Amino acid sequence: MKIALVTGGTSGIGKEIVKQLLSNECFVFVNFGHNEKLMLEAKKEFEEINYNFECLKADVSKEIEVFDMFTKIKKRFGKLDYLINNAGTNVDNYIENFNIEEFRKILDVNLVGKFICTKLAIPLLKKSKFPCIINIASRLGTKPCPEASAYCASEAGVINFTKSSTLELSKYKIRVNSISPGLTNTPLAMLGWTSEEIKEQKENNPMSRIGEPIDIANAILFLISDKASYINGENININGGSLLI
Ligand SMILES: NC(=O)c1ccc[n+]([C@@H]2O[C@H](COP(=O)([O-])OP(=O)(O)OC[C@H]3O[C@@H](n4cnc5c(N)ncnc54)[C@H](OP(=O)(O)O)[C@@H]3O)[C@@H](O)[C@H]2O)c1
Picture (cartoon, rainbow, N blue to C red):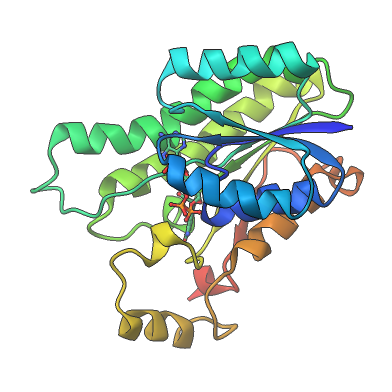
């Protein structure tokens, strides 16, 4: 059985990734940072599929918590096949109004968190036959916007961190890729958008809609499969073509 860890797996994109992995014969460690209520709700949905999962609380930006999480994974299976670095956060603010702590927290969770999980996953991934890491970045990592400087900087960092990881980890046969979703229908994304703004986003998208978590989860299933065995160091945009506009 393949063993996966999905960070931020209790909501939005991460939750759908977990569901698809459970439906495709994986055992999934479902990480979350803080929200126990959200975790319990997600757990019920996962149990409708099967019981091949374990929820693990750990703030990905805190090395000691992530270390404890990997100790549990090591104890239970001694290996990891797939690390899906998905946990992320955002606060919209103008540079003039951002305080340093707020800015730093976004970088810590979105970028440093992926470094910590990658570093601690390497020994377990080395025990897998076909290991891979997928980092969830964002369209804003290559097409930045105002009022989200910390988020845009962190996601640009994730895209390049992915490529550095590829160059270092290919010698262990660990493939590393990133996925950059466009606007996707999740609690994080919908926060702060009016229905008028969403309508506008849909109208401006070549496919006349915004993304759904399943659009991202389907790409994950492909990237972890043998069919993607020569895809390495890529950043795959999934946005219905909106990056072209
Ligand atoms: N939705 C979009 O439009 C969109 C577009 C581009 C990229 N993305 C990226 O896709 C990823 C998922 O986003 P989403 O929209 O699905 O978000 P979401 O619905 O808000 O879910 C975020 C998940 O991350 C977890 N999380 C947050 N901070 C964490 C931390 N410090 N440690 C561990 N887990 C943490 C949350 O759990 P807790 O609350 O319990 O911590 C939750 O499970 C993010 O990396 C985001 O940047 C999203």
